[in-house]
Image 1 (tube, rainbow, N blue to C red):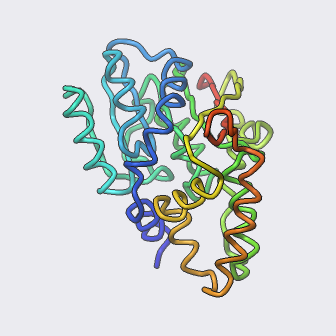
Image 2 (cartoon, one colour):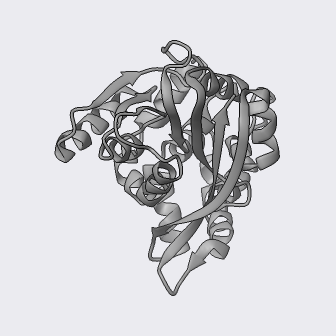
Image 3 (cartoon, one colour):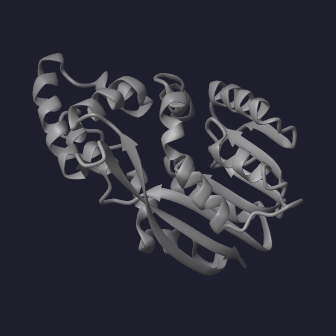
Amino acid sequence: MSSKQHVKRVWTVGSYSDIGPNFLPMAAHLVEAAGVGRDQHVLDVGCGTGNVAISAARRGAHVTGLDITPDMLENARENAAIAGLDRIDWQEGDATDLPFEDDTFDVSLSCVGHMFANPPDAAASELVRVTRPGGRLAFTSWTPRSVVPAMAKVLQEYLPPNPDAPDPPFLWGDADVVRERLGDGVATLSFATGVVEQVALSPAHYWEGARTQSGLFIVALENVEEDAFPALREDMIEAIEPYFDDGKNAVSMEYRLTEATVE
């Protein structure tokens, strides 16, 4: 299976339409921070079910939402129809090879979508390439100390070694790594940190949702020995516990928002 086929499968299985609404506040933060305005041409890379694209279109922008997964795009179209928006162009495509001319967009955005593209340097250079000089880039990524990387670290201990594994996607939440990847392509660069909270009755419920709804975990778990599942579950619950607030019945998920002006 090719890398692109693998990515498509990851984002097709599970139920991202159930997970995506948890990230709506992050999408709103991203669109607000980027200063999206009326009649701007905006790209949403890894648009998923449309959180960012629809938020930007509601501000009067001309929006293109791009995703590698057809099922995601179908869900995004349905969400746009409910919102009564017809200014969004939905396209299938790869973040490492964007199907647009240079300097096409005033603003290029991604909400934890670009971070799964491989190789990451190609995703970074493509974001810069399609954004006009003086235009803006903005994206969000889980920080390396967030709950999702903590869970990924546990899972890695139960998976067979993979010397060809790509760089961890959570490096997009490391400011030093982002500076290196964007390099001379940007004139200004700034960072902010935010948190979204996903409601759950307990750390065990949060893990149950992840293993049954998240394609990332569903596909990875196919490579775990069945007799290891009980121990894996206990380790996952232990990893989630520090992020769980029993005063809110929610798990905190920290993200980093990157803003840049293209050179």
